[in-house]
Length: 201
Ligand SMILES: C[S@@+](CC[C@H](N)C(=O)[O-])C[C@H]1O[C@@H](n2cnc3c(N)ncnc32)[C@H](O)[C@@H]1O
Image 1 (cartoon, rainbow, N blue to C red):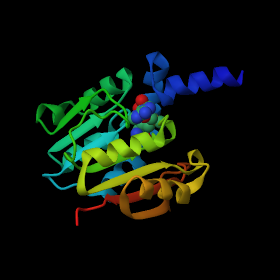
Image 2 (tube, rainbow, N blue to C red; image 1 turned 180 degrees about the horizontal axis):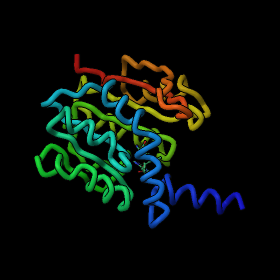
Image 3 (cartoon, rainbow, N blue to C red; image 1 turned 45 degrees about the vertical axis):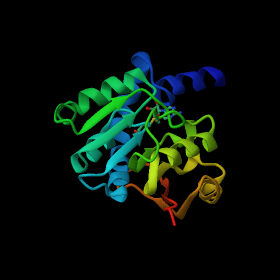
């Protein structure tokens, strides 16, 4: 029973697929919108920044990022989410401000030191190998580039300090952590972290 529930949740939210994935996408677009938009405000990309959004799901944060920056890339492993994000962001894609590609946090397909800002909301808990994913995000960020992670607090059982230690170990500094409470009624608290890829001396 528990295994079936886990499989249904994965189809809805983990790596959305089929009709359940489309339902999950609609629920996430509504329920996570405040956190997605808040993460973009915190990351504060400028018009010329290259922004990599990891696991954007239905694309609410992607759209917010591409309204601020002219060079946004969304990396997402689910075909259903790629299609939803493509529909939501169609005008921004047509204007050349956003492109979407299949990929994961550990395999972004981006060149070394090519990105100014990485944003990830509610997918860190799904990365099968967190150190490998952090190494990949470190590789694609330019020295001095910014990382912004947000994940539901309850999905981070080992806590923000353990995550901060992993981020340090991956070569980031100026690591800051805090908890954010979305203004939306019933929306769960988000554990958030910002860091900078250590600039060259
Ligand atoms: C819970 S949803 C969150 C979507 C969106 N960011 C939000 O907060 O509404 C998780 C998303 O991460 C994607 N995902 C799953 N595994 C991933 C991985 N290893 N790397 C990047 N994204 C992943 C899923 O396909 C899904 O779109």
